[in-house]
Image 1 (cartoon, rainbow, N blue to C red):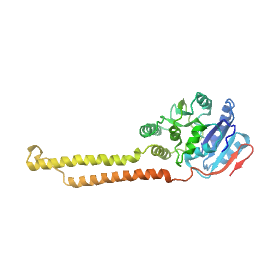
Image 2: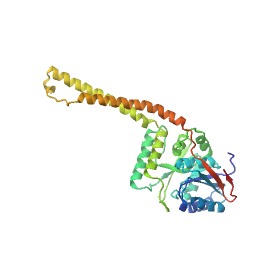
Image 3: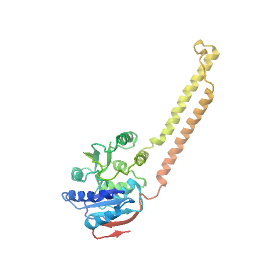
Image 4: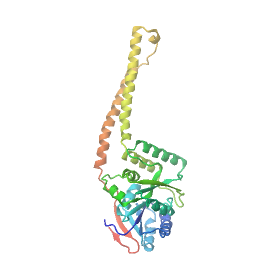
Length: 326
């Protein structure tokens, strides 16, 4: 895709955010009047079933900087992000949510920080706005992810942030289909820094990120950048075998001691079925090892054979001129 003179592309994945789209676009337009350079707002309609399409059509008539990508269905949060990124034209790319929780008023600060020589500037939430349970789970996820990941990942860094076209080009060249964007952004290793910002409460509507949606995203992040989860089976089997060897040796020692008549161990009772239970435990541990070995191969194959696209674009519409690419 030919890059024109657009300096900043603002990518916004949106799913059933009809009430938030108009005020969000207007806030961005006001903020960007004070930012040097030409910009575009790329909203990805991620299979919305509400009135988002009508709202976006009205916005297209009034905002020449607006680009709307309509996906054929909901392709998930990261799928919508990749759709926006791969069709954006800017030299710098900025991602923010469509629920107004990521304040557009922070955009100049992010861009200014990038001017200091960073290729990536990501947002660090001052305080999480989810309920206490989700907040605790997310904090644990980031800390576990940081421990098991094969790359250095920042804690509590969401997708809100800006990065260079060079970073995007690297991400686009990655052949994997199931892209976990915030992990890929860190994987590039380009100069990066974080900015603390205050994420506000959602003004309209309810979050679309259910517990299971966030759990699936967390599992995707863990498995995309670490094989430790799948190796846990091997670890369980390995340490289980060691435990069984220790227990078996102890039982043999006790039996020999009793046969030889050692008074201390003579009356130590052995539960009936102990040997059978030990064999069952050993067998289970061997199975776990087998699952771990097979899982290593399946995990490697899975990364290569999933060639389905991240998204399908039904049409692309641009502000004012009603230009559409099918």
